Length: 546
Image (cartoon, rainbow, N blue to C red; front, side):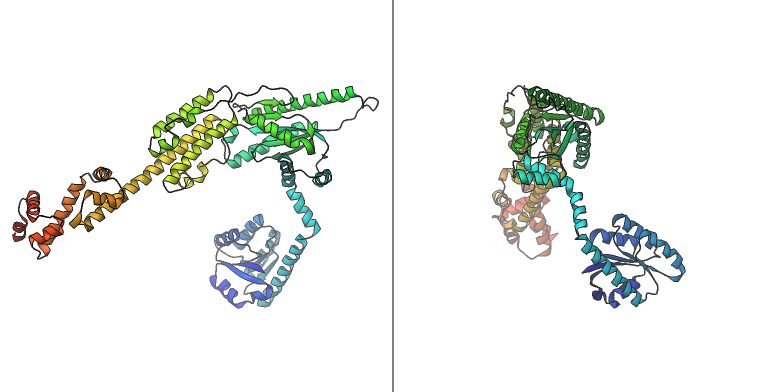
């Protein structure tokens, strides 16, 4: 079943057409209506439409302009144009926009039916063709880069398959590798200058780095690459076969010399990659070159050792290069005790010690920078501890962290430098402070409102303890909070409310003075009279007689 969009600025035309035409006979189950070109484009963005019928003459955006914009986004969407006699020649120009048919107004129902029948049959034929082998192959070619990426990620994660199955996939994906090939792995991490960018911009930089790497490596190696789940770039390299002298090609010495030269070439190209990215993209990368191994059997171990080496060192602004073919010194790891010193980050947030929290961040930055070896895992540790504290204080205040600071402020990838990490942490702290103080102010106002309502409803039996119990707070805090927000003490407010009610009852009721005293919660009417005299300079009875 299909969907159609009718467009005409004269609403009665498409309203009548919707009701009078037998759409179901042409397998059209849903009719969308638009009364302008802009409204039509909006519907097309939100709905799956199979056919568009539009008038040519409309204000602001005419039918030809509408069709031109539709074809720019959906070139295969069939469009039928309605035209009056006066503009018939003009409508012929619509053929260059791919209009399948144009019909004269007033609309001939039989011609519309014939046009729709042809159009629907054409659509259904296209659907059938889409299921053909040619379309399937086009789809395969379109998805080939992601298939290559997925296969390499499976191998990196240790998902093995038989030699025959792997070789079959390599052949079908047009990859010049075999399961038994000896390969090397290059692991690339984009450093701080790149990771400061938005996700979309970062992906553009990754694409640019990949292109630079392929241009360099392809001069001497077959290349296969992917983006792993750490957001690192991984390149698998196999030397391009070169012509050799058959008389001595099998000698051990020749093979050894060739192997050494390949390693030297790869080290040179890796260093050139590091230099070119810094030079042309103005950002640093860290590059790890693995030892040699076979594609099927060794790739997982090669990758794990490269990851381990990368995580043990944090690159500076320009990054670094490390070859696992060469020996490298072990890393001495030290703990960041300052992360766990009392008062904890959770306690600082709970008690609103914002400046002390920032001072702790500066100490962490200095402590990390002073470590003899600065590792990526330690950056992860700092980020996890801080993010956990932020989640804790948000949840303690009965809300999600994302609702307080926004989804965009919560990092989805690890930070590559301590300055970048502490900048993020301070920004998060400032956002939290504003939101939590706003929330606290609103909650305190709500408490004041509850106190006032309770006082008004319970004048006959009031006490500080009963008010505090009602709002579930300590009596001392209730008194302090009320004075802070109202400018008068709670007892002064209660007296004011009682005296206002006393005046009202004296003016508008026949209650005796002792009855009014009882309603106001005074156990002794003489005490009520004294309080009233102190407030107004006369007794209740004198006030009433006045």
